[in-house]
Length: 420
Length: 135
Image 1 (cartoon, rainbow over the protein chains, first blue to last red):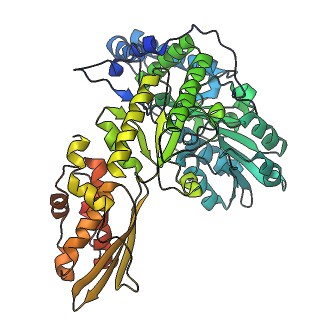
Image 2 (cartoon, helix red, strand yellow):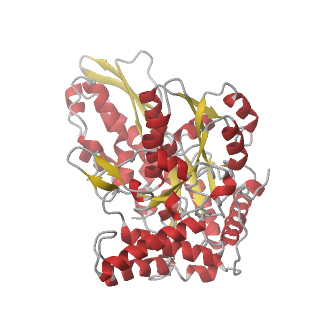
């Protein structure tokens, strides 16, 4: 298995220094002697000044509704919004910006596929294929669809290393009933980097479409949707240094052309009569109502910022920190790290500690301004499979530094002394 | 708020050395509930004699706040009538804990009470739990 995700493109990168990068993130600056140790970037990333300024600038200079007004600032707003789409399309290797639909987040992008593609093209008796490691956002829309349409749900299991057991894949696809497969690219809990291109190859050969939940990969590593071989790729802005409220769905144009609209109303129509309407062309067919314009602009700025850092460098940095964290955790008594070994681990490290509940760990760490995630990280089926109710997770982005991990380790030692 | 405030000695004491953790064989009332946020589970077993709570035990897993509050609640409950048990309020539990809880940890602190009330009332008569709502 290659540990660089498939679909990776080499991008020119300036050697980045996370200590310098941190200066771009206002929330990470020391205030009143307090330094935020933010280790929850898999939940949401922090935002650089460039993103905040881009959104301010939009509101201060050209706030107007897009695709409607013919006056100057409306033209500027429309240009800014569509420029963000072009940036995103280019960032992920889309053939055309028309293949990039802005949504509210990954969850909405996945729901769009389930509602619009699933309800049109999946029939009773068809099967859909997921993995045991999916985030709830990539479980629940499919459960609802399966119940509604009479679909069978199948799951790629995990093996002893908590990695997807690809040996099971041919058997799951053998009867030809799987019409859609949906797989997380990088697990938010295990930190596994799934071989989605290989899975896509088999899935497509079996006559199914391939969906990739790229919520943890597009923000952290180079992703080229062509190389992934997928049909649909969902991701969200707020995990990639952009604002909340905007995400994206990339899909092959032929699918988007064939699919009916998801939400309906203004902007997504070409012509409205009293009793019927004609849909707008792509991508606007899927963007009903006034979209999050400033947020799209912010996402565009985030993409630009990430391109400057270089996604290869960002990913290498994440993985170095993950390996460092796993190494440090090995010295803490009672700690068990979830997911694959350090050399195959992405930048999210979840663990349990004997006798101490994750909530208590997180509360003790919080006293030192160390922010970690405690709970099931929206992967309850995976936690059930692993036989644990909850775990604690540290996750990184370009501004994370080893000192952050050291602060967490100190807190863990204290928590262990308090509770055991 | 710091852990210095939240993890008072009495909470750690109830967490590490609970007096009422366990189960009751053939209880008159048993109910289990969970906190969807963190997957914490609490089961309350109650033995009733002459309309009074003769014995009560909690089981399950959770953080120190949810476990300590369950243990304290059990201590308080023994000897109470079911009607008295129904009247225990969220304020009573928070007073017992003696700490300030934010909206997230509040759910941990009140899980045992919520479980107890659902069990004591029975699901049919369950008036709903305002205990669980964010302030």
